[in-house]
Image: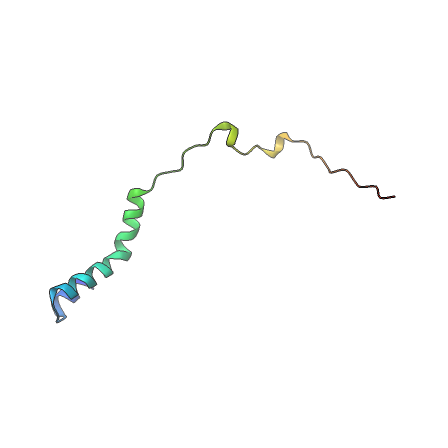
Length: 66
């Protein structure tokens, strides 16, 4: 599309440059994202979620209303 814009479309260079940048955003956006992405750091052991396998199944006490 960009090549077609520069070869066939009439207009000034500023207009063609702006439209070229608009057309490049969807193509270059994911590349910029992946270039800046870093995996999340590992949490300290005290902040990690505990496994539920280690906890006994405890049912809450029932209320006796007299």
